[in-house]
Length: 111
Length: 114
Image 1 (cartoon, one colour):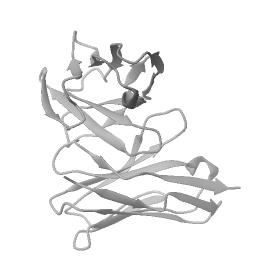
Image 2 (cartoon, one colour; image 1 turned 180 degrees about the horizontal axis):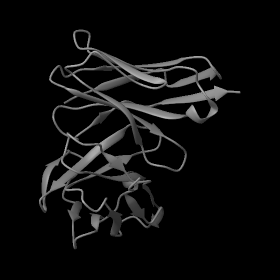
Image 3 (cartoon, each protein chain N blue to C red; image 1 turned 45 degrees about the horizontal axis):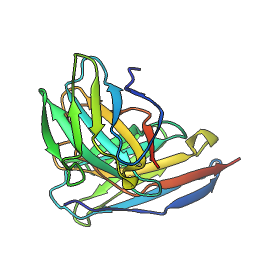
């Protein structure tokens, strides 16, 4: 089955700086790569996703890049704000929502 | 924005007891899922449900687990005889038409088996 590795496990950034989280996946058939943000006491919320026919996608301050050859994808958050502090999960799947999640990255934005 | 709601938020039970975790998916969604997250570990897929039957399940979802959509609004996960290792946060999720649409997660039920 699919195995997703996520790094780093924790990330502390100064407000206004950028944050980058990287994930690798094992199954070359995977074609859908969502990113979820989980705030304390809440379930994961989709923040951005990318499909395998696209190399990059951007939505305001967040962007995701995908390298199918190397089987890795990354989340980029620019101009970080305190409300970006949360746990971020990457995931991968082939054609359904049987998602394989990464272990999560705890992002702390220092004011 | 529409929400997936889960009850209870916390459930404490004795080993060997049956528990039912409840979820109300978003009203017009057709695909339903259960995931779980053991403390400090990855979120893991348990089961997907569509058209009143299980469409896929993981190796975690053994005979002790069952799912049901007893009416038009609820989606339940039953654990028949809980074990200590069933202690985890259980998330329900739903989507409108599968992978083509966004997956919405509930806030989870924290299950503690003593």
